[in-house]
Length: 320
Image 1 (cartoon, rainbow, N blue to C red):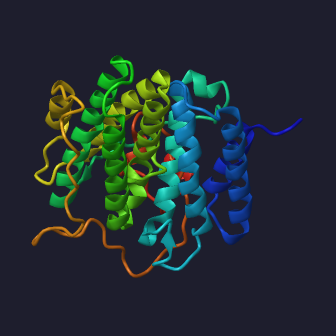
Image 2: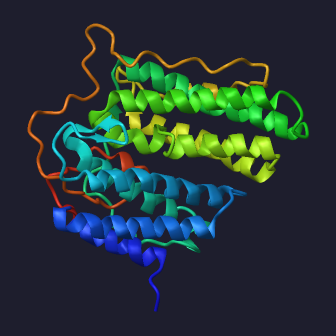
């Protein structure tokens, strides 16, 4: 009997649990490429939210594959243009669990791909405490995630009339800025969040779908992308704290409540990647790099950003 995408992903999970030694890299990469190819063949076009979720999984696999390939590389080796420092294993852990979480949360995806869920974490996830630069970026990113979707919905509701090209340019700028900011941070920030902010992460995939839906007048694709961008902004907001320790909840509420039309202007360019004076860097990796071990911790809601995932532990140490 031929192996399915689910079989291959479950095999990758088992191998990652044991630690990603040099002898495991090619086997895991082969599994993940197989999953990617099968899902791409099954969902060649985004027409609804389940299709978009599948595309997000397909794209996030690019990040996981690249991280696995560099799991035993020296510190400073770039992974998709980013220096993750000692946190390559953390990247693998977060992406792998996020993919399981996406599938388990969508019955439409499960009909194609249903990886085995894992038990809950022993300790609740702790929000990531952003520095001032990251706070400014996320605040603007939350606003743009919602407002660009509102503008796209207005154009769709008007029969796809209006300045589609202008809005597409704004969405592309939003996606490019988000990708560039995450890439500039590196270290723990990128290991934890690149599957949200990058071009092949959740935000970038939804932005690409929104552009395609507007250009092809695909209402189903536009609606799915708008919903995903808004949901993702709320997800990130719930997993992070502002520099002053406050919540982003008010930023999300204001972004959702403020009606914006296509004449609302371009999304603001995110702040410079260099933190202001007195602000510590986002993540400065230590000189020594321990062997990368993918701590594929059990997923619960939003656990793909859990600070409780300790890369020094294997999965079975977190059970019980």
